[in-house]
Length: 326
Image: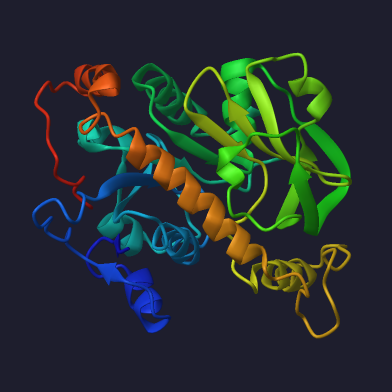
């Protein structure tokens, strides 16, 4: 299916060149044969935003339904790592979006891992987003630091500093059984890890609403499902492209940081287990399929969720259109 990107976003040209189905306007549904696009908001807190936009767009482009991607940041957020003209053209503050039209949200990691959560300068704006997501029962995928931040906000889970950066490909396996999110995911899931802190399974065991889904023997918990809300917490980076860990290693070396090569890295600069991208596509495809199956505008038994979102966004009128890109 297609991924629908903001007009003239650099990632659109890149993905088309790679053979992905990319559109800039929602394809028209014909006689019910093509469902309306799902509207996904990417709250992008990462540096180098154009590369991150392309990584997530690739995964959303292989889902079972068209996905329209809108880019947003929290109130109070500023960045110097991405050109100001790119931010002004393609990003908007989260609460200026027509939130009644949103079907799901992805919140990325951020290079603030060693700070206390409340010391992050845009924490108040992000916490406000967390509160809205919870009250609106919005399906959300929190990635890396955002996963730690959300579990801290909702459940009081702490993060623990590591003696050295945990960096590389680590084989993740299911924790327990019955995880439909893992249907078709090649196991073990060699997931890219790039962290200075960790979330421990022992901390999750005291919170029964948090269900670990994937964990690695060395890297620890990698994916957690929240039974109390439609939220997933992915502590690692399945969205990474095949060269991202290599690029991070080279960047850290250029900056004079003492860092070992990432686990799984060979001298050619490649990762023998680079098939994690197949597993990542399956994981995201399953997540999108679950959201599409529970679309409250198409399923009467969950229409109450839509009414709640409409009330919280200041609107009570159903709208099947897409969220407008900035």
